[in-house]
Image (cartoon, rainbow, N blue to C red):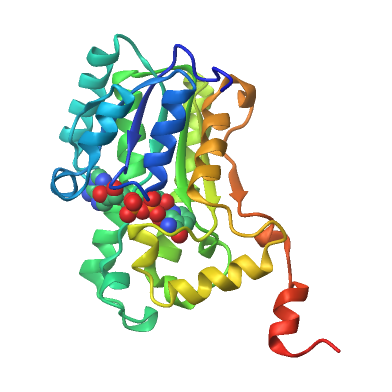
Length: 271
Ligand SMILES: NC(=O)c1ccc[n+]([C@@H]2O[C@H](COP(=O)([O-])OP(=O)(O)OC[C@H]3O[C@@H](n4cnc5c(N)ncnc54)[C@H](O)[C@@H]3O)[C@@H](O)[C@H]2O)c1
C-alpha cells in the first residue's frame, strides 16, 4: 500500500455486491488510508451486502436514490458530519437501463424507460455535482470520477440506450469539470472501463461472448474490476492533481486496437 489517500474523505456510490466495481474501489480506498461513506439506492441496499463492506472498511452507510436531489443533499450534508469535514473524492458508479434489462432493441426503445435510464445513469451525476457545489462540500483539489463505457464513442448494438446515456455522462464530466474547476479547483473525469463481470454488466444481451471478444482484442486482455479500482484510486490521489475533464480508457488497450492476431485466427482469415 502507498497511503495515497491518507487523510482523505470520500463518498462511494454503487457497491451492490462483491462483484461491483465500487466494492473494489471501497476496499482499495480503505487500504490506501481513506475514510468514506458508502451509499446506494435504498431499494438496492436490501438486496445487496453493503453492510459487510461497511464493517470491513469501517464506514457508515447513508442511503440515497441518486435521482433525488433532496436525498443527495442529505448524503453530502451527512457525509461531511460523519467524516468531520469537506469531501475529497466521490465515485459515481451508477448505471441502469430498463430497455437493456428487457432486451428492447435500440430502434424500438420505450421512451419512459429511456428517460428513467438517463435520470439514473447520467442526470444523477449532474445532480450530485450540483448539490456538492451548492453546499461547497468538496475540498479544493478534490476529485470526482464516474464510470463509463466506450459505446459512447463507437456503436455496440446491444448497449442500446446506455450508449447515448454514457455519451451524456461523459459530456457532463467535461461541462461541469470546466465550471467546478474554474471556481473550486475540483476535478471531474470519467473512466471508460472494459466489460466487467458485475450485475450491471451481466444484464447486457450477449455479454459473455462480447467479454471474450474484447478480451481477444485487447493486448493486455480485459481490465478487471480490481484494476479499475486501482486506477480510480490514482485519480482520487494528489498524483493526478492536474487531470480533469477527461474520458480515460481503462481497457487493456482495447480502444486503440483495430484488430488482433487472435481475432484474425478465430475468423480464419490468417494464413
Ligand atoms: N460491468 C461492466 O461491464 C461495465 C463496463 C463499463 C462501465 N461500467 C459502469 O460501471 C458502473 C458500475 O456498474 P457495475 O458494473 O459495478 O455494476 P453494479 O450493478 O454492481 O453497480 C451498479 C450500481 O448502480 C446502483 N444504482 C442503480 N440505480 C440507482 C439509483 N437510483 N441511485 C443510486 N444507485 C443506483 C445499483 O444499486 C448498483 O449498486 C456503472 O456506471 C456501469 O455502467 C460497467
